[in-house]
Length: 341
Ligand SMILES: Nc1nc2c(c(CN[C@H]3C=C[C@H](O)[C@@H]3O)cn2[C@@H]2O[C@H](COP(=O)(O)O)[C@@H](O)[C@H]2O)c(=O)[nH]1
Image (cartoon, rainbow, N blue to C red; front, side, top):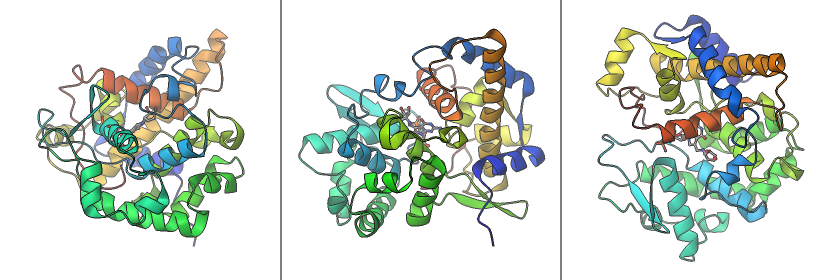
């Protein structure tokens, strides 16, 4: 019996039969037009991973690869009930929220001499230590701390048993194939198995596994062990921010019924039909934006530094969402509490 449909196949299937979420063709074209001037710029290239984000490692060594593995193993569910009351982590004079609060806490721990990125350490780290390492500078803790603790122990033990305690060994086993690395990760690390059912089929989003492959590509600057020949086969990462920004830009639309639910802040469970439609249509939307953007680049004879792929579009749109939080106030994000995104 074969495995689940790939994220791209899953997205196509969902977009074709979705009832509450729609990809808007005109919106897709508008976003591609918005991205065209950036296509030849510094933001839509792999070097941006380091250049634009001060918390990301600037090195391309084994320690940097293990930093990426640790942060992407915990890269889920940072949203809080209200934007006014949320987990914040102060680091080097700056306050960080959301995903960046995780990175700030990791860097703070390393500065304090806690080897949080070492599998030997986090395989047996205690719940009390995890509470301390990921402590918030507000009275709102980081969500799902217990789940993060359990995942650290489980993942650390597997990395020690199967990959000599270093994610670089897993990367080397992939032979510069993004798909091979993706499958090594989901086959060996249970917390990365972001799969569910839709219309009687087993589908996959693999959000954290795909962003782990992409961030490995980023931290290795697309060179050496990170020179993935098939990086363009990785789709956008189906989180809760990209749907929000795609809706804000008019490339994704919700039915009145679903929009009402989201505006009320109603929770959606992982694997719910509407939650799956949001994630699947978002992936498909970015695939179409990429296709249209590549057509525009071709038509205009624009010179890009490297191939424009869904990973670079995702990173750009995610950063765009961060920078336009105020403009997006009226557009809700969907609230699912889970360990997958
Ligand atoms: N689609 C997509 N989802 C992403 C990221 C990232 C971080 N990537 C950066 C790291 C290295 C690169 O330089 C990227 O810039 C986190 N997330 C997800 O967002 C949510 C957190 O959002 P907020 O609450 O606003 O912080 C949560 O589900 C988290 O898993 C991305 O890039 N794409």
